[in-house]
Length: 252
Ligand SMILES: C[S@@+](CC[C@H](N)C(=O)[O-])C[C@H]1O[C@@H](n2cnc3c(N)ncnc32)[C@H](O)[C@@H]1O
Image 1 (cartoon, rainbow, N blue to C red):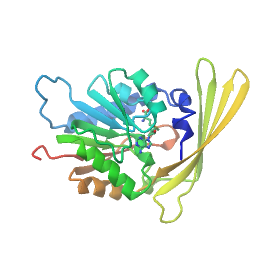
Image 2 (cartoon, helix red, strand yellow):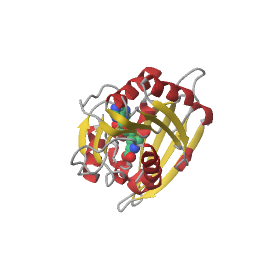
Image 3 (cartoon, protein in one colour):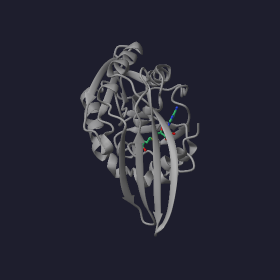
Image 4 (cartoon, protein in one colour):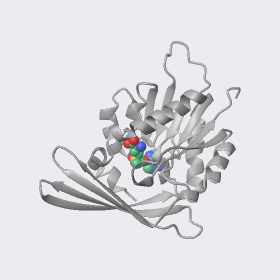
């Protein structure tokens, strides 16, 4: 199913979720990475390398580019275009995080909130395999799902309004309740776009993964990585605050 927010409505992404809102989270990531990364720099290379899978508009990435040599992958050409404009120094690729193979390794492989779109354990495993396949010895995988089963609350509604030069956009999300035994939960997104009093309403539906913390840790370990769960601050709407870190042995 085509997700409208990442296709015909992609132009709303920089308005409802602007890059500056990712600064604090990026700083938390940098602290986690600096404390753990154990890779020898390649000859002639001053910065470590980072690959982001599911980079979206590259908003989080824009705070990491000063610290890494970056490449980024997304399944949506429209979102990649937004990220390309924001992060011109980053090499961008169209690809599915479950199957993408670049044939090169990086010091850090990150999947931010795009990992929410892994809605079965098979999907999540495929994405983690992709991340591990692109990782240097001593390198780190970072996965940041919006929710884990233990702390998820639904049904609920979250909403916020953001102003841009030519319009204001109100984002309303109804987050449903998972079916018993399900590893996913459905949301309905409503966008109210106010262009000087001319109101437009757009609707989109998304399904997100919802796994227990143990599943994330077990899959990282099954991929041959040391696994850790770090709880950080949630962002707007109570999303986020979950960081799963996998580390490949420096001796492998
Ligand atoms: C919420 S956006 C990511 C926003 C990003 N964190 C940022 O800072 O701008 C989620 C992204 O996941 C991407 N995505 C969803 N499923 C994917 C898949 N299987 N492979 C790669 N990208 C995927 C979507 O196209 C979308 O761009």
